[in-house]
Structures are given as structure tokens and as C-alpha cells.
Length: 270
Image (tube, rainbow, N blue to C red; front, side, top):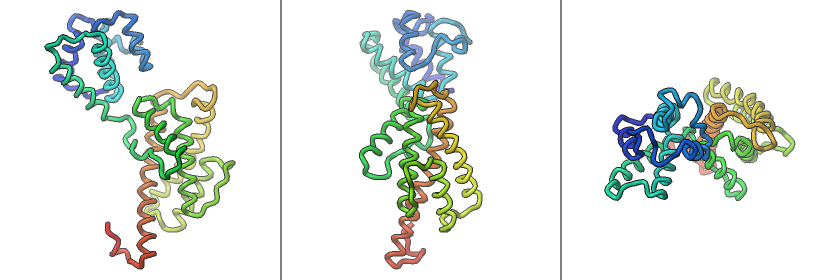
């Protein structure tokens, strides 16, 4: 659920003219059409828990959905209202306040480790792929980019393997490649705790299951796509793993450079 405060809710209700049960100048049909653009079924029964008016369904939406999703809709409503000239000229301060509310909510991305999903080399295809994955999250559509995420992880793991001299063929599945990578990290003493090793090893079976999701539950083929909640879980798990491995690779690179320069551990600047 969103964390809109009482003050923020009152400002939004005033801006959207919800006191009479309406929302801006929407009819039931155009209200439904507006939410369809965000792939939200605003006529669903769970949005009618406080009543069936457009205002009550909007309040239910605020109470049920996550910050980022609510922020996207509020921003869209403000843009729509500006195009339709729904705001009075003396309401600019209120519009500005509500824009700030939308921005705050939009900053709360559904994937906590989104910054980890960036390209790790200068390859143009990798950069485009990473941008597509991030765009899906920023639009709160993780289920629509599962195949892109699978390809991103494959590229990331292949690059990591290359830096450790691990031979990788294009025919080898993702979980097998990752298993070799984890084995090398363990054998070369880069993992400090048994628990970390076990978490990474458990990720091998997770990535094996990801192959099935990519082939049978994503837009990689003509499939019914996986639901939002499970897609988001996959994104969060993968992003957290990538963030850890990126940090580990940086540490290993710094340590290797220090050894090449003849420094001991006490001389490494961190």
C-alpha cells in the first residue's frame, strides 16, 4: 500500500475534485480507459471496497497499491487535467504541491537494488539491454521484461566468467554458467562465509527455474506472462544478487591491482 499521509490525501482529493464522488471530468468509461493505459483494472471488486464511485475507487487504489504505481497514476492525472484545462488559474500552488507528492512516490521504486541493473562493459547491446530492464521497472512493468532480465543476467555472468578465465559456450544454460562462476569464487577464497556460499549456490537452482520462466512465462515467446507480484520477486532477487557480485568483483579487482603494485592489505585505500 502507498504511504500517502492524511495531508497529502486531502491535497490530492481537492485537486482532483473528489468531494462529490467524481474524479476530474471523467465518466465511468473514460475513467476505466485512463487506468487501462496503466494496465490497472479500476472496476475490479477490490477497488470497490469503500463504494463504487470514481472517488471511492481512487481512494481504494491509493490504499492498495505501492508508492511507485500510485505516483505514476497521480502524475498521469495531473498531465491529463492540464491537457483538459481542469485546473483553475488560482490553483497553481496546489498543482505544484501534488506534483511534488507524485515525485516523492515515484522515487520509491519497486526494485530496491535497481542501480545494480546497469551494463558492466561498454558493449552497446549490453547498454541498451540494461536500459530496457530499468525502464520496465521505472514503468512498474516487471512482468513485461523478464526475458530482457534473463538476457541481462546471462551477459553479466558471461562477462564475470571471462574475467576469471572461465570458458563459456553459448549453448551452456545460465544456471550451469553461474555454477562454474560460484565454484571459482569459492576455490579462490573470495567468499568469506559459508552462508554466502550457500546463498549463491541456492541461486544456481533459482536461475535454472528462471530458464523455464523466460521460455514459458515471458514475452520471449507467445506465452501468457507471469503475474506482477511474482515477476517483482524475481527482479528483486536477481538485482540483489547482481549488486553483491558487482561489489565483490570491484573488491577483487582492487585487491589484484594492489598485489600487482606490490602493496599489502594494509596499503589498499579502503
